[in-house]
View 1: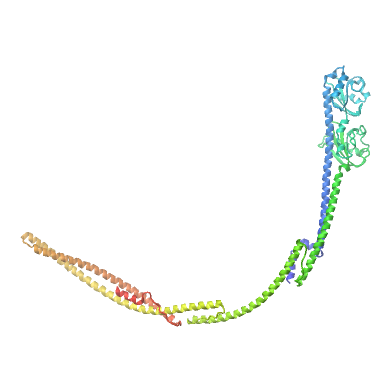
View 2 (view 1 turned 180 degrees about the vertical axis):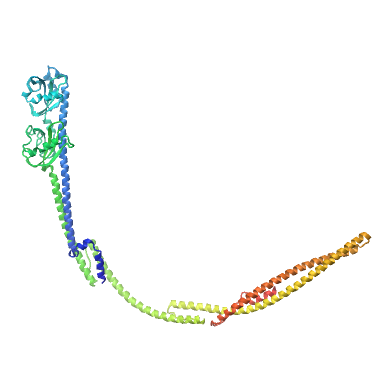
Length: 629
């Protein structure tokens, strides 16, 4: 039943994944491990392929951006070449030499030698009503019409009216394809300086062939789609394609139109990642970057085989796929080996655990592994040894418990008997028999200690009770003595007070008589003194005697007054002592009332002997003290 309860608790704590997972999978570690391994392999495969495709896409985007930048750079290179040549032509045309009619041929030759090697020829032409003719030239005959020497473009009226340097299309010069730059001569009207630059130099500067094997750059006129400048697929300048039509295939010419569409937009270049093979361009799928040349009708096209441009991108893709497959295979192989080994070890441990559960604690549990599975084996081995020790200890404890139980029962019986015995003694003591004592037998130290302490307590209590009995009797007797003594002393004190009062009264009477005699003597002395003064009678002896008597009477009166004061003090002291004796009698009476009941109560207790209670001074001394007062 306990196991069912635990199972219910575990089921209530199951996660959602555990509830939806079939039991056949949950019971097998190998199956679960295989499923997890398969999920991991599929996840790694999906992630690897997705990452590879992302890397490929990003890399391809970078390559496309690079070729777009290459086209923009090549277009910028051509535009700077044209700008530089225009500036040179403008500067040369501003010289005053060209307004003269003499020495022009030599001047043109000298000028050409001072310019760059790209300059093929320099011509000075003049426009008139009859046409435009050559005035002087480094290669053409003088006075030849320009139209007859393949320079008919220089006779275009729009050129002569613009007043700025004009650039021609590429045409064949005396030594090859050239571009003519025509500028008005500032010092002479209707004269123009024509400098022809070979395109071979700019073709050499184009680096399309260096970008990828089989790559090349071409500069095409967007109007008639004639190839102006051709780098050549093998780096051979012009490549034999200059002044030819770019292509007859409309799809191949689309980048030219797209480059024209960029003029005036925010973008300066574009790229087509993959163009179909075309015999006029490349015989295999190729990539083309395009960009217009500013201030011209020219378009730069940078070509390269797609395999050369994106070959390493495809290698990255193939390498990523191969690495992903290798990782999947490696994880699968290692996982299968690890899972099989782990599952075998767990199954072997489960079988040994089943044997332990059936009661076989001598089963051998050992593994050469030192990982978590090996530690689990060690844990089960420790648990087996611990169970064996616990079982042995439990058996030993059970036997010890039985012995202890028997000893406890014996001790309990003994304690019960002693408790009954002690209870009997206590009941006798409570009834008043203070001679009862508890016996000690040496069987139990605690019980013997209780008996000894009880007996000592009863000894002290018996002694104290005996002393209290003696004390109560002594108190009662002493109270009687004190009462009788106090009564006698009080009577004596009253007699003393009466005698003192009577003496005091007699003293007052005697004082009055002495005072009267003293006053009579004083009058008699006064009379004698008067008689002696009037009758001239010598009574000095009598006067002296009377004075002596009067003085003695006065002293007697004073003595009598002192005796009266002393007698009053004695009377007061007698009255105070009488009052104190009354208080003593009252206390003695109260003590006597309390001592008699206490003695009656103590008489109920049975003791072996009476113990005398000794006063510190003795009751006899207390009763004799009033007599001394």
